[in-house]
Image (cartoon, rainbow, N blue to C red):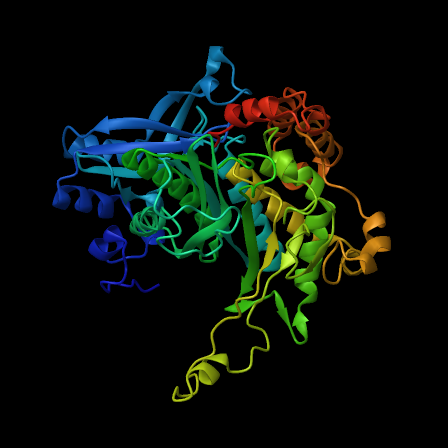
Length: 501
């Protein structure tokens, strides 16, 4: 595997070490730390609640540094996982070298690493969400011979004082440019910092959501990534969410990933695009468009879509976003380029002719054939998602579809042509299952289909139990109806969940 050592590679560790991050070793990191005078190491890890935790180390010498990177550290697991009792609570956190990056905010030179959890016996902790994802991907590779690649669309709101010179146009922010979007520079800085931290960033842009309320500006933006192996895709998502929030603190503004800021305005999703790649070939592409392999994956995702909300839509305001006519799905179906379905098949440069030569008549013919870009997109998750759990759920659900003997029939029956709310689709619409409308209903769906996720030892029963319990504790069944048109109550619940995972 070759390293891109050009100045265009923003990852300073890769350029210095001369290797891709996936091949970083302990000695590589020690060499970097010594050369750059790094004074601190931060361990970061995600517990059962899906939130990022931190353990700080001051480096006191080379031997101490070697110990940190060799052994990890001991922590109290009972504070992070409900399945661990206080009487026997010790866990180890052990760094994953490939996730190392320089902290762009610390005045003291600091190296950051994401970690995995291990038991007192030195075995991976079954309830560690990153380990659940690892097991799911390993199983997918064994059964299909393919790698499961994914990318996320990270949507967020910046909440700040409005610029009186160029007021925003309500709900018309999509791809808007300065000066009619206030936080373009903020987004560009976020893109740069995420890329420096190893994130494979595709692009960023202003999103639809923009409005003013109570003298505050609410402006929505998006960062999208490139397809990478799903474990790396989730690691970089965790880091990116932290960086954007930290940048907000530096700018003196609030950043929120909440699924809904207010009723009637665009919510923030966390859409996942997926593809399977084998021997350099994208298995989503067939001879006449979307492959049967992709359709089987879609069938599995739709079969599990109600249960997947337990990992991807984890707070009551998630279900204020999943309502009809808001470019968010409510009906279990799929379609091409349709933003109101559970699984969308976006444009994938299949049969695109030669657009670049049409736009640029002097351009020479393409010299190389690139791997197909076609993906399938799950549109249900939002910013409250437990990102390792939802990613593991996507792999499990996709593999379930590949195993289903009637998967192609199911995919055919659940396909919707064009706008799902078009009168021509009325009969089809009436036949479709609905997604859960509350955390309680989501918990019920996961309970009903837990065997799919527990099969092959991927999701531990204790992790399913804790997820179900957390969701049911919200007691939010019928919440949307109870607070309908009650502005004060809506604002109170939005504010309660404004800062989430």
